Length: 178
Image (cartoon, rainbow, N blue to C red; front, side):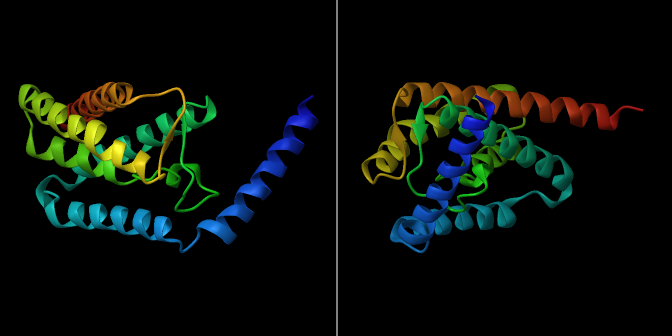
């Protein structure tokens, strides 16, 4: 059974790579994903607080890892998929917004230090993402929802933002204490 699973995974990986090389790489969808994520990375580099660079880098790293894990779980369980990918062999770079969400969380963390303000800002940002941006991504076939909806997206992003702030604050406090 294990051998059969491995063979199927290898075959699927080859097909996915072939699809990406022939149909997806340098397509308009691919360019959109590339430019969108580069713009958000540039935005982060311009706006990041240089005096709190370590703390902001930590928040970005935690966000990036958690977004990658959530995307991997959603893909694995067939909740959603991304028909167009930036780099097909690296699952963390498969999402349309692999840098967008971590940058949004990081900048929210930077600009809204108090929990109340952070929660309000996160709710506003993720309402916009979940009910305006994701429907646009679905409409243009950048994101396909199977057993998922926009409300689940909002809730998962909001919780993700809370976890990032809690972890970043906790690590920041631990680093400052003797």
